[in-house]
Image (cartoon, rainbow, N blue to C red; front, side):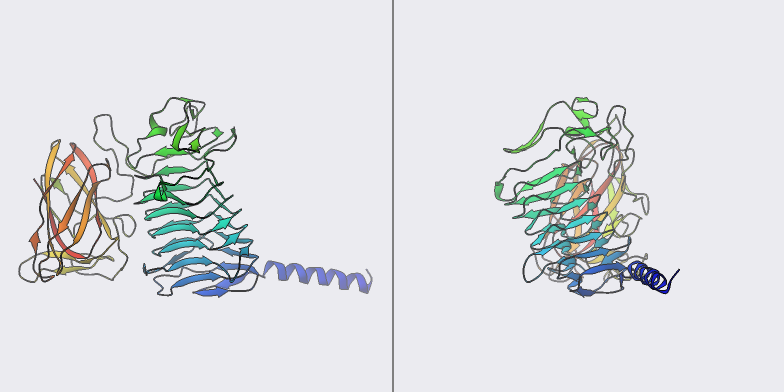
Length: 440
């Protein structure tokens, strides 16, 4: 081989080597303003940076390699923010996990973008397009956020193969967004779709029927799987043929899923539900969350607030302000000793903090629920939700006690519970200390 050919081959080899090694490593909060491929090489945990990874230019691929970026729930913070001085195009975010941000992943003025294989948990917005067009979200999970996905002023986007589950306010929120296609997704939230201000411009909720498998193991792809948090709902109870419901599911005018998926498709492959499944007798076989009791809790009776479930962050509890606690039990929830008496309490429970309690209910009936709490100012409140039957819930208002060290009992409210094992979720909408919950 002549020198020229050797030189050409050498240049090709060098070019291949550069191409293979050209990804830029990301190890901490960063601003990306140069096109190229970037790879997260480690978790970024509990950063106070207002934006963890900011992308300001076109033609960027950000590969999270499955790593977690976790914030401290600061207002208007973002795990990944894509924006520029003008429209940004051709930005891909994939294989990343975003937790504890205001925006998990935020595409602001993006055209032809893509989010794939990513997870957003315990954020206010899991993913937000505001506005974005001709972009796609696929094979991703949005769970335990306030809103799973929000589309604002966005059009011609596609959301497919995603799971929106256990989001507190809505799985998908649409505000002034039309012409989007949302199909082959699993939605399992108390409110699956929220049309802001009641306005519901036309969107597509199914694709043309084709061979699968679909997201719940059926053999045909069409629309979406529509479930309540307890596993009931349209897709669990409707008549089906070949894994599709025989009747369309109407969300609003010009927003109809014409090919909704059956949650338990005939001849399909079973897909585990991420939430509770009631038994025939109405009791609960498993809470499906991965949490399990810290101690045995029975109703009627008193539940100590510090005896929340095992399972750790996102399972037994969530806090927007994690601390290193070693009082009574280890974890990220702050526990303090009672000043004027024996025992412990949860200290400084904040807005969006929640805790799970797996309980055994002795008899079916309506129970009077109250809580022993403290707060220097009134107007704080929280909910107690039966996750096995999410419509069964009560709101308890916290009285002003002038000091966090002075506890008082809330007014009681009535909560219906069936006999058997349940998972109760206490969701905070204020700031207070919590000592105990009483069921009688």
